[in-house]
Image 1 (cartoon, rainbow, N blue to C red):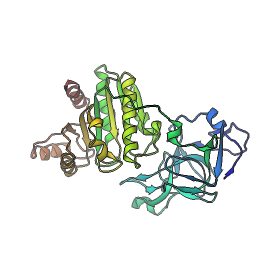
Image 2 (cartoon, rainbow, N blue to C red):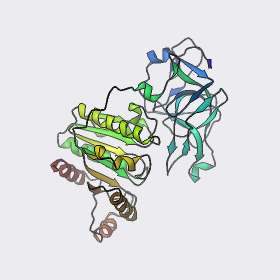
Image 3 (tube, rainbow, N blue to C red):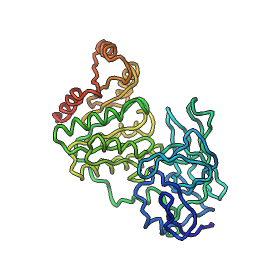
Image 4 (cartoon, rainbow, N blue to C red):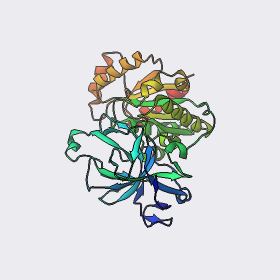
Length: 363
């Protein structure tokens, strides 16, 4: 194992004794303080895996993802030679980059990986959307894994918790959908504002998907009193082990309940067939505080297929449907009525107020 000298750098400012300058810390690495960094070194010659924090050097000027969301939520453009702190992990998006990290990746100083997500996830890219594929993945060389007290630093180590998570005593409203970028965040924001108009203390969370600080900042902008997501409890993404994802979700919901939130709006990122969402929706303890589900789909056929899938999972919770964004609302409502269904407009304050009131009246 070969170690560099100790260093601690935030946004280009060298804090430790090394001359190495780090351009940014990826947003998925939450609450990494200068004091902690000052105690750290970086090493090669070790095995790393999902969640390990690494020092990366950019090898080119472009790629399908060519910016890094930093710890303040700002997208920082990356160029060849830039160095940043990222995290090893998996991403299996149906709309964006797809790739993974082997469980025992040897970091030997020549390891080259791909930037899979703006939040700083690094792994071996396997596929990108057609409109991005010609650019290829942004390549980075891994200069070393972060060590503290001679042990690799992982997200789970940064966010260690003792004992079992607190049971969630607050009612939970899940927001799910058929894909990323389908309008879940828009629906979440509209409902958060509706609950706030009712005078409630609102918690907001992202429980699954690929971590990004932008999602949490959007919830804060909508008025949420307290927000949390899975990088804050040790996961780079939820494309990992089932039990780890369940434990993370329970910790997040319990944390929001302890913050005295009267309603928790929890978004399930991506689609409902990946990122361990089927496992969560099939777990009685996870579903216990859930009052209802708001489902966001891109069209009527997507709605119908989703309802059938919920039935296959044995979901008995009430499901509220949103009008698909960018579609003809009248035509959508008429088609849904033909199947005995209706949907609300997440852009309408009146509609969101009605849904929020209905949720809070449930036993």
